[in-house]
Length: 254
Length: 166
Image 1: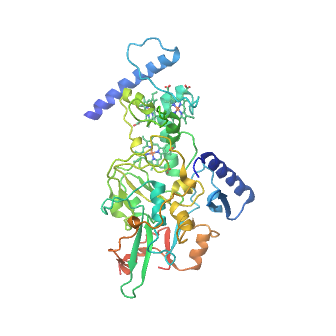
Image 2: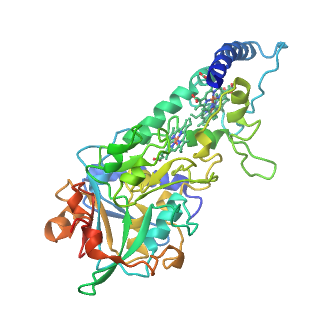
Image 3: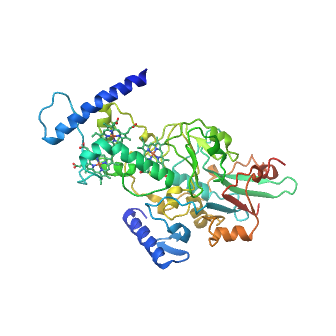
């Protein structure tokens, strides 16, 4: 699958046109050996020169029953996609996504699931940021604008999910689509570079391909999207609902 | 104090540089009395994204505009992308490997050194072209990676985790 940049570009373009013209539901495109792209209609409408739309609210639904303790497909994919590594030092390690293990001591119920930036509707990190670097994009994705981040780390303290981390060491050879550097805070971007190109976040794609199919990505504002139908049909919950931040990440069967 | 000196230097050096660059570009090469930055241009492409004269003066404005449009609004056009500059302007060493655009004497550092401009861009941004922009491709990484798995020693109390106020 190397040496495909042109083919890829071409496919992206034709796919967009194809979807536009045909107004198709979910279309599947197979790119040679075993690589499948799912194109969701709600994601395909935007062309590269259009800004993210406030009519969309991107969200994740995590089915905890499907997620297993051993599987780390989502974490591995995020790490490879965004170019971060763990040093094994919990105090400074990147917190883009991590697997948690939980237990209800009363019932003995145990579960494992991934936690990442919860892309809150009312993000605490944005409230405390002194420079406006923490912000929520029109389509609900919470990001750090590293160009204005001064590394004060208030947002790391404010985040109840401990979903942000600070880069302590100089880096080189970063991914072109995920610039990262010393002295700034970072967190899950919901793979905004992929979402803007009609692709699912890396964790979701990899959970589908190599994992247990426990993650679903989509537009919570679009009543016709799979994710909206699922959250309408099944009981789901957000972590720390009591804080009223209204996360865009929901958990099913937890 | 230092910043005042820096801005003084900048404001005096800049006009000088601009005049010089104009002189050089106009009539090729009349001997100048001060040394000038020697810039190595890409060989694989013939044109920049705008006329060369415009680029010399305005590339920083294009970049900063594009930066905000992409970062804040998710506009993903190719025009004035920083990675785009790098893809074209990084030249190849004899062994075929790309030389970082910000290495001493390379395209994004020659003028800046001359004009005492210091960029922080490349602390985060890649300095060489990337083989494949691999976003359609999923990384080949192990599904079961002990190193990335949850730490067994730390099983969290579910009730507290979901609702600490309880």
